[in-house]
Image (cartoon, rainbow over all chains, first blue to last red):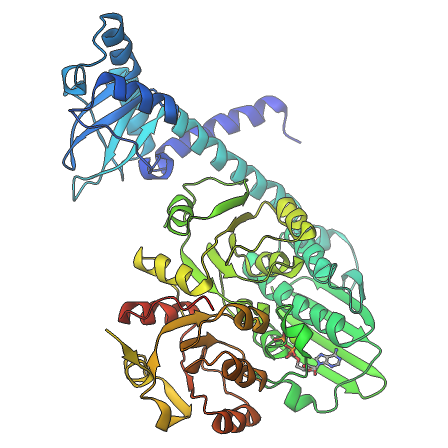
Length: 308
Length: 116
Length: 118
Ligand SMILES: Nc1ncnc2c1ncn2[C@@H]1O[C@H](COP(=O)(O)OP(=O)(O)OP(=O)(O)O)[C@@H](O)[C@H]1O
Ligand SMILES: [Mg+2]
């Protein structure tokens, strides 16, 4: 167990790392509201108010010619010059950032110049591609820290770790879901829960995607073609096995059912977005091993394995 | 293409507002049949569909689609909305039909990507 | 800038599965969708329909709405019965290996406009 103090120090260290890792373009706002040099300060006031900004770049026919802030506006209004053009008040001596610079440069420039925002330009084309405020930096960093934190949480749960602690010749975690036939309101719920659980268990996203796409296809087949059944997932180190069992009506010709495009779905199913005849082929593509047994009048037993 | 540009291009309504407009959408898929959507890898994709049932959300979830846009003015069913909210999905709705939606996004440079 | 099915088939490298002799038809617009009820309600006469559906009902829908032809996407194989019925009803069916999105993009590029409306 780490003490809180250590944790906090680690967090601070991570924040510093991030300032070096992240690029200006990852934090900047790309939708830039601009004004023209000939716009009046009154125009500026309305634009700033409308978009809730405290400053904006000044563009003349595609060229960045200045930057004007709410301070400039206040000064102008105090002097009663609302109708004067923006070019009278803007600072033409502005500092820009390149989109591919590390955020740390931006932080240094904020400190050095005391400006509230920096226009961001492309290093090659020199075109304005965004604008960066301190708020943008904070938002971007917080988002990143949150993602990092989430990933750490997940790593702590890595099944391989606690599997290793449980002594047995073969440890398996089983998850069972009951599936109702014909219930379209809930069709997909089991696979959705499974997906969340597999994520929590720290299984790689790519494998989770393949497992749950396949389980969802199988779940839909149960809902559409059968009276319902059971879907189980068995998680082991290195693989996840899914079994899907129902009690009828069974598949008369399995080889045919496995062919892309083959479907016996009625019209109403097609109107609900299924019946392309792609479910079973999808399951096959997503899995490393597949076994499908069926007896007409008795039921179907599908089992597939995905290596993780 | 950013979410903002997509909303503008499709003149779309934002049905569920839990998004960052600077979020980048890499490619688009247009389909009403869910197994089709599930045949491809879609991280960061936009799904244009006329299907508004809960399965439009479950499908997006399984296929890691991040933005769903209902075409031709369709609005999601209540259960659909609830599921999308729970999952933090972005839901849009445009009055344009699927054909026009694809065409406009294409003209703005959004890729499709037929390759599997 | 009117386009015929023939122009489209050539430009998009479509595999014409049936209705070769009908390709002189003018394409008045495009309609994309896989829900038959939608197509029935909204596709405009003379449009070409882009879909990944392959079962026989697509012919009935195309025929009822007087669509000029069907483009089946994702390289799907139309069922035998579908092709037979299409032959009887004079509905050309062509297959593209591209997705709906990509087919529509190419049609737009050629100037085929949205074909919605009654
Ligand atoms: N559990 C099952 N019980 C009975 N029949 C089934 C079962 N699963 C599949 N089938 C049969 O196999 C056919 C092919 O299934 P598949 O999942 O590939 O396509 P689909 O469900 O018809 O369409 P899609 O999956 O594209 O929505 C189905 O149309 C159905 O006839
Ligand atoms: Mg299926």
